[in-house]
Image 1 (tube, one colour):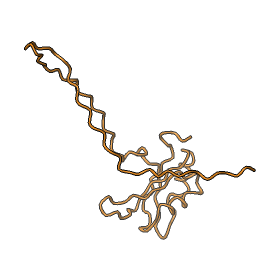
Image 2 (tube, rainbow, N blue to C red):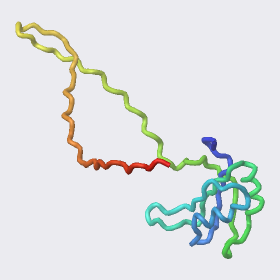
Image 3 (cartoon, rainbow, N blue to C red):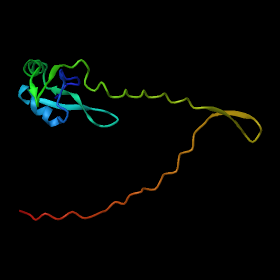
Image 4 (tube, rainbow, N blue to C red):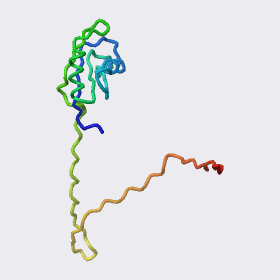
Length: 146
């Protein structure tokens, strides 16, 4: 089972402009088990940027990949490879913190005699909406005994 924080995350720079994620994974396949490979993209245009990240299974394999692949020419571009300083998933937005439920509001309720009593406010349940889909029911085919 893979740990929460993998130890073999590599930063790869100076990639050819039309290099794909699959080509990046294939380039590092000989160094160890490639868990993922992704080329960065411009968030506005979607155009590939000339750097990416490769996630290799172990820290040892990542160090060997740096030694073997740093400075290698791919399609006329000498790539730069180093251990990534960012944690995997660092560019994910932070999860929102759950907000605390407000306490039930106390309100004054008048009884028939004009006295006041305190009670807790209970919201009315919302009416249940009708389903917007149809369920198709079919009988399963019978198996013949062997």
